[in-house]
Image 1: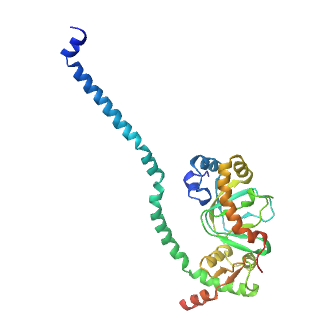
Image 2 (image 1 turned 120 degrees about the vertical axis):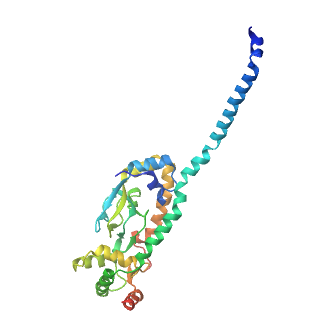
Length: 143
Length: 143
């Protein structure tokens, strides 16, 4: 037995139809999966956005202590206040730095940074700085 | 230390750049530790290096000792590397220990000039910063 007869006798048409449908179903599923890949890539690219809110929260928590004035800064503020009174207001920040170095104050750079960050020294809007008397008064009250 | 793309992407200056453009920038950038009191740029000296703040606090001083402080990630120092006459307009001092990204000025300039799309994206941001800092650099303040 040869040719179509053999195919019919052994369910050849049925088997080939099943085969074709399996292959095409597979191809369709593959095409659908490939068509959705861009969404997965987009999600992957934006993964840092999902992390951001948590980071912001952490940042907020971290910035809170910065606003409080440490004992060291409170002590240094009295010394820097005297220097600023000597220079006169508004004063240039580099001059304060230079003078504090000459006077041998400990770690003048980071102390000035702390004073700026806790708003004891504030910019006057013209490139110079002024001493925040109110803030300093508040510190005195807290003590 | 080399720079990773994700770090660059998180900086406002490079936020508009695509992956390929960020790769070009990353190949030029180096992470650098700075220590309290370290001088990054000096007024009047040839502008050879461009810096981006990753952490730490800095003071920039200009003509007549006018100054301001930088405290945020993404702040830039040394925009004179891409603007004629390629001389630093101010002196930048680290007020605290920190981390910066540094890039050779000439290579940065070459990249901006050779890739017009990338150059346009970066220069738009730098121009905004330059205009904000112009009163400090030119010394033309309302007295």
